Image 1: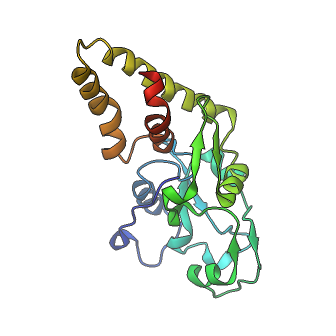
Image 2: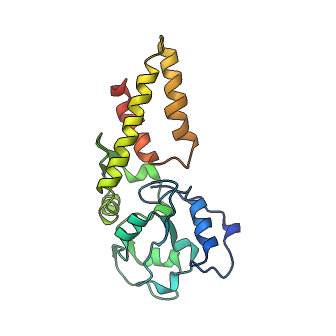
Length: 209
């Protein structure tokens, strides 16, 4: 899950989500990553968080648009688990949020440390947060291809640790880890699977050493 970086000055007036420039703006705002699974450098789709079929008046409202990979977009499709379904036209996104209780996470509004996401070493995502659990289910964030990609990330960490251990002193090892593993996570918002990378550093790094 990523926090969206929106520059509202770039949003065109009379927005039409089908125009290519809208997708380009969304792609940059989402750091070229899927808002759900964090796969990066994707062609991607425009995702209507509140689905077009149920909220047709929000199809061209920027606050309702996300950038997602094709698989997550297809998995979510027209699903949006909510309680108290009573939003009607012309309710804007804020009013919809007041009238209805979302049972899944909107990535555009998420605060990462509140999601209580964690992973196992085999790349499987889980959470202590009920809304995040529902999001994992709706978007199938434990599908085989994502787990495989997270395993690749874990193996990259293992390789860097092997390189780091070649230094003759602990200071050299630590500096290499900081430069090659920790610094990119802190500074590169375009990095894929940052949530998983952070979890590795917090929970698995000492074991890898």
